[in-house]
Image (cartoon, rainbow, N blue to C red; front, side, top):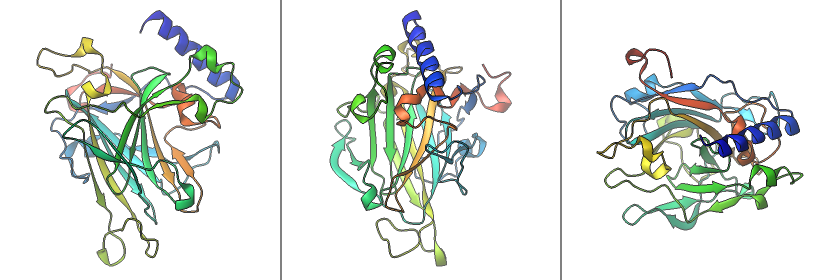
Length: 299
């Protein structure tokens, strides 16, 4: 990390922890294990990599320090290999609402309908993932829903110095680069899938039907490292990436609209009462690691 970036990160940590009374995450990152075999992106969490992954629970209620919800609204797992970051997750929800935005995103040949992002009056639900390569200013925001709509857009924040002058940063202080999306890397493409969980009488849950009681769904997302902007210094001649030991801040979050209001949970405890975007330094830290049987100490 360049000295200027490190200085900004240090300043941002001090800003977040001093201004909002929060503690930075533990210095020891959680491992994300390399998948020996790539998962089949079908929405089913039956692949070996998910069985071996560390469970990530998103049950910390937004703006309510110490409060957790059971069962967790969202449980996630992460995996990786030389081409992709993989996300597998399960949502627990009794009324699945997934609405298309009418806007498509993605490269030619792999366009995907994006979901609406915030409609509490329509009981909207979303699974959300925020992924950074260490920057507190630029990172990806990923939305996925029970209808398999997918959105991934680049987020840009003001400098730490500029943020320090804003009493309470908010939506207007975030730049949402909707024209920027996670790109494909030749034949290595973005993919996603969902499976609706069974409900009473083994019938599957339904989407956008408030007359029944759902149980939720499972989802999988595949994101190419090149499209995520992995450091080019780690790219091999064949186009794959040597990323073992790389550390990433990642936040998993859930939006549930069952009560007609936006109820958020995340995988990070004690976040300040601000949009998730302004607390990157407090997101959980992960390290890309070899499978437990193949590794010594985690880098």
